[in-house]
Structures are given as structure tokens and as C-alpha cells.
Image (spheres, helix red, strand yellow):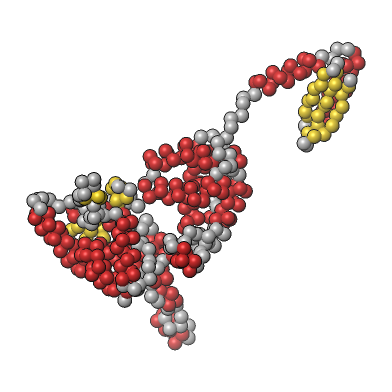
Length: 421
């Protein structure tokens, strides 16, 4: 029997043995523990110490403390909480980007971590690993992938992944699972990652006629007009699929981009704003010819009205052997069955379909159009995006800037020099 004092885990414990029972009490300082130990020894000697009362008091205290809830893993939190929340509140493109970020990058790396173990240091280590991670290759065949050079994730890709993670952890903070968001202010960790402009691969002015001629010759007028519209307006694939005849002002020569068509439904544009896009004379003429041919086709089959979409899908094969008509073009089908094959027919290097948008912007800038005009045509949310992505296509931009610096040849300076002032 007795009481002893020993340190453990930075605290001081009084270990008590009395009448076959054991108990322990924790204290912050050795002095406090020693005082209690002396009092316990005196009580044991006097025969008045009741260890069972101490044990019962400790048991009651443990019952009074609330049970610690099990923290869900990051994957469980995403699947049960974030997926339905984001599906209901985010634009389809944004949701798809966040879902892809979680599925491809976040879940495999840190998805098994309980939320209460998602620390700042762990998130930093994850972001650093993204900077070092290779991006998926753009080509599909084994032979093509073997020839394609390795490239790291771009700065924009990493920014999107971190944004998805930060959004999920913000919700965890609001639900009281986390005290603070460990994924905030991480930009400095991927500042030196490759810029998005490394991925821009536009067609040249000499290549465009070859590509258009191949498309018209091998895939017909409707597909030719669709590709011409992509190259002459810079519209996104979903915006082209969502284009309707009422969006085209043939008299004033512009298109109002109001929507995009993706996953079988029309939604708002990426920026959630409508914009006006100027139409070239060549494209306007071809759109008029396309509308005329379609009206003649439908009237010839006894139909008084043509479908609203400008660019139509070949149609879905039905059980009776017929095709469902009037549906917007499937841009994945157009890319795989028309656009890439047209590149091969024209003997041109295959580009992504989105590079038609880059082609539009780069040629306008190289022809002297202002970044502000290009920004409005593309529908960028800020001119910074336009300059960051396409600034290197502006001819002589740096030289024009330095030539504006004042020197002795500046009129005011030259006058003062001549007068000796």
C-alpha cells in the first residue's frame, strides 16, 4: 500500500495502491502531485482512505464526458455530403471538374484520411506531390502514347484540384468537423508549375484552309460549317452544340451565345453570362446556305419547321431502324468521327478540338486585334486570362512597350537639352 509519483507524457501521476485496489490521478506539476501523494499516504496510515470512492468518482466523470464522434474519411464526406450539394448548386462544368479532381487526384492520395486528420502539413505534402505528378497523355493508342513526351500537371490543373479540395473542407468547417480550413492560401506551393499556355496548340493560317477543304470534301457541308464556326467564332464546343437559329442575327451579323449543350441538356454558359460574337462574312454566308438547305429538306418531307439547333446530331438509332432527328450535335462524336479524321485527310498534326478556339484567338491577336476585343469574343471572365494564355501571340508587344519609355529624343527633353536648362 502507498502512493508514488511518476512523470508520464509530460504530466505527473500519483499511483495509489490500497486494500488490493489501484487508482491513478494526473496533475500538471510535480509539486501538486507530491502534495496529493503525501495526503493519501497520511490517510492510508490513519485508516480513513477509501480507494473505492476514488474509483467510483473517476468512473462517474468518464460517463459525464460526451462520446467522441467518429470522423468520416475525406472520401466518405465527399460521396455523402459534397456530391449531392455540388450537383444541386454548381454549374455542370464546374461539378464535372470537381468530381474529376476528387476521383483522379484527391481520393487515391488522401481519400482514406479521417477528416480530423487532414492537417495543414498533410495538405501541403499533397499539393507538392501534384506539382511533381505527370499529367495524363492526350493520345489514346499505346503506340502514340509511347511517342508523346511526358508533361507535368499544369498550374491551372493544380489550381482546380486545390479549389475542389478547399471547397469540400470549407463545408467541413461549416459543419463543425474542422476548426479551420487547412487547404487555404496554398498558391505559393504551385506557383512555378507549368503555365496553361504550354498546352495551347493552334492551327496556322496556312493549315486552316487545308483542314476546311478536307472536312467539306469528305464529311459534307453541315460538318464543314460547324468547323468553320468553331474557327471563326472561338466558341466552346458546348456553346456550338447549344447554338440555335434564333441566336443568329443575320442582319446585324452577330451571334448571341446564350447557352451550352452538355450531357443531354442546355445550361448557362461557363461564365453564366450571354455574350455577342461577331460573324465573318464567310461564316454568315455558309450559315444562310445551311439554313436554306435544311428548310428545303424538311419541307420536302412534309415538315413545316426545322429544329431549333443549328448543328444537328446524325441521330440515335432506334429499334425500328429509324433515327431520332432534331437533336443537338454530339461534339464528342464530331471530334472523333469528323474533326480528327479531317486532320488526317489534310495531313495535319492532330490537335484537340478546343485548339480551334485557341486558333481563333491567336490569329486575331497576330493580326493586330486588341486583347480586350478578343476577351469579349471569347467570353473570358477577365482580360488577365486572355493575356496570360495568349499574350505571347501579340506581335511586337514588348518592343512597342519599351519604345514608349522617355529619352533625350522625347520632344520636351530635347527642348530642355538644347536650351541648356
